[in-house]
Image (cartoon, rainbow, N blue to C red; front, side):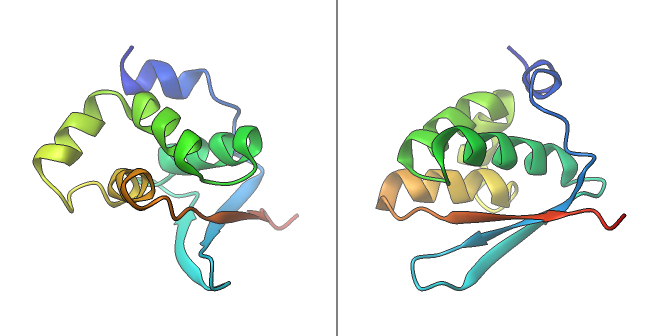
Amino acid sequence: MAFADQLAQLPKVAHLDALHLINAAGETSATIENKPGQAGSLAVYAALAAKHGGINVAAAEEGLAIYSEHTADARTFPGKHPNIDRLIQVIETGAGYTVTLVPRAA
């Protein structure tokens, strides 16, 4: 199934401004914002975190399946898709992330 089709099945993220990925040291490793070019990844990571309690190896494996055709492109061109590269790194290292959701201001 194509990424666009996968994305359509995920919960909506209009209520979120961003999410932070927190590493084992308690530091923010990355922020994914609800803006063009990142909103799809925000939906993927938010759904994975809700299901898996964070971004662990199982979440990362599921995430690569959700990213579908973009996963192959990321493997061919490392650095082109940093949010996919991060999932690959989680699988390779076993080091995951805690996720903090940032709600949109009312």
